[in-house]
Length: 95
Image (cartoon, rainbow, N blue to C red; front, side, top):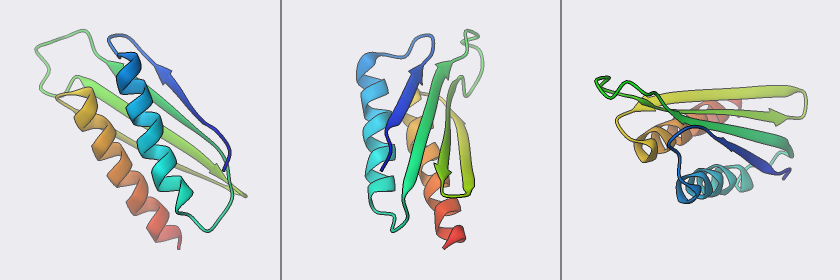
């Protein structure tokens, strides 16, 4: 598998960036298809009044295809987990 690159935005701790990298890498390691690269972007919007200020986005480049997923949640951890679940669903559909 190619590398998983994480771009942590504002208010994202190094531990959360490492968690996102590990969760995406774990999912992609189970694919039977080569992964060229994967990019994760994490951020927290500055408006604390929003119900889901944390964002997680992933873009995975497979041979000839790009698969994307994104999620928003109350916390960065929740956004990463929801993003991972959506990515898994999209990859399963590609079969």
